[in-house]
Structures are given as C-alpha cells and as structure tokens.
Image (spheres, rainbow, N blue to C red):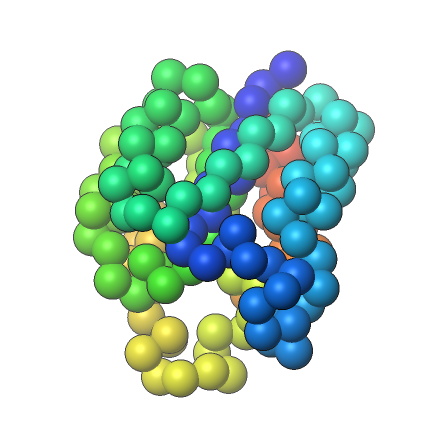
Amino acid sequence: MKTVYILNGPNLNLLGRRQPEIYGHETLDDIRTACAALGETLGLTVELFQSNHEGGIVDMIHTARENAAGIIINPGAYTHTSVAILDALNTFDGPVVEVHISNVHKRESFRHHSYVSLRADGVIAGLGTEGYQAALRRLGTLLA
C-alpha cells in the first residue's frame, strides 16, 4: 500500500478547542481516524503529523521524499509566509494537495495568498475537516 503523509502546521494541535466557530469541533485525532479508515478503502496508508515549528514541517517533507507517495498539507499560518516549506515541497516528486479547514478567501486579506499553492496539485478550502478526506480521495485517484 502507498503511504500518504498528512502534515499540519501551527495551532492545529488545538483543533476542536481553538475557535470552533471557525474550525469546528473535530480534533486531529478525529481527522486521523477518519482518514485512516478512508485510506484503507482506497488502498492507502495514512500517517498524520503536526508541528508548531516551520523546521519540523520541512523535516517531515524531507522524510516524505523517502517514505510517502503523496502529501496532504495544511500549513496553517505558514501558508502565507513560508518560502522554506514551498522549497521543501518542490523537492518532493509526488502529488501534493493543500487543505484549509476554513474558507481563507472569506477571511482577512493576508490569508488570500499561499506560497504552498505554487506547488500544490490541488487546493481545498472551506470544507471543514471533511477537506482532508476530499484531499485523500483526490490523492487516491492521482496515485492509482
């Protein structure tokens, strides 16, 4: 089975407790459980990671180069600031899908720009935590 890394950036460890009116009540563990079950039906193994540190995310992308066929990434606030994450993603040969729980285009103008989108093969925003499953389905198609 092919492996997909689901990478999450800063503050996503607080999902379900941080601004639930924006991000909902599901936790990263809920996302892990739902994606693992869906991944199984798609013939994919799912590994979920989270870091509040830019370098930690870069390190996970480097590890994905050797261990993963695809990446789903929600870089959190690093979406709008991190050339380092973009550069790391550019070293990854497999497909990448960018996910945002909220509709970033309905929010503050600084959230409208994404460095990660320059590398992403698809972008999903505003579907809540269901966006991770939509991204996984897309990777299932791309990796078939």
